[in-house]
Image: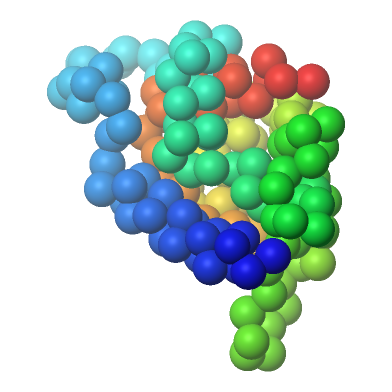
Length: 153
């Protein structure tokens, strides 16, 4: 648990910083097309790029999975939610459990795009509680993440 307790806050901070810097791919960094161009939809998302963001950049499974006594993710719970693995030492209102994100059940594509591009806004329009990062992904990166999460069941 010590390994997880030390590594998780660093991983979350790095992920938030990486996302705050801007696009995660050359595709995302391209100048926007004419203002009449359609916004990317989750249906147009690149599953492999989404996997890269979820697994290697944001590391969603670190919070949205159950961990064993050694601090390792229990494979069959990956992205299926579980007890929040860390708690800050100060008074807080953090949740004690994280939700399943495999499949993104309950989210429309529009709600999921908003979640990842407008700072962790839930389906009902409220701000999600910390430690959920306030993502500001590009619409294409968000579509890629959604495509990957919908592919995971």
